[in-house]
Length: 201
Figure 1 (cartoon, rainbow, N blue to C red):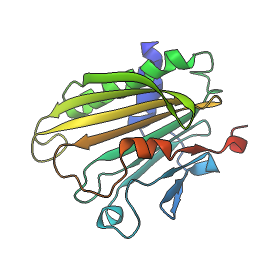
Figure 2: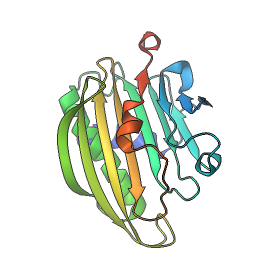
Figure 3: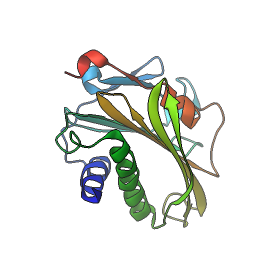
Figure 4: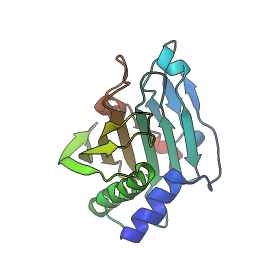
C-alpha cells in the first residue's frame, strides 16, 4: 500500500512526466482540463494576490492536479487533485484505504521537499457537500531558505473526499508569516470543488 502512495500520489504531484493540458480561469473559477471539475481560485480577480498567483497544472486523462500560489504577500499554496476510481492503481482500493495513502504520499514528498517532518495535530471524519471525507491538520517547521528566506511554521489542512466515481485530495498549506486577508479558507476552498459527473465516463 505504501508503494501505491509514493508511486501514485507523490509521483504525480512532484514530477512533470504526465501529459499537460491547460485549464482556464473564468470569473474566479478554475475550470480543469477536460472540464472534469471546477473550483474557486483562492484569490479574487483584480486583487494584488490574484495578479501574482502562481498556477501549476499536471494531468492525464484520469488524474487532474492544480495548485494555486504562492501569490504576492500570501505565500500559501492551495492544491487540488482529482482521480477517477477507474485508474488502475486505485480501482481495487476502498476509499477508507485510499485516504491515508494519499496523506502518506503528500506527507512524504513535502517532508523531503522542505527537509522537515510533518506533525499530525488533528484527524477527523466529516462531510464536504454531503460527500464522505477525512480531514487532517499537520504542522511543519521549515528552516530558512527551504520555503521562504526566513524560518517559518506551515499549517497543512488536508481533505480527502469520496465523490463515489472519483476521489479528491485538497491540500492547503499556510505559513504563519506573509499571509494576506480576503483569501479563501481551506474549508471554503474544499467546498467550492464541483465534479462534472458527465465527464467521468
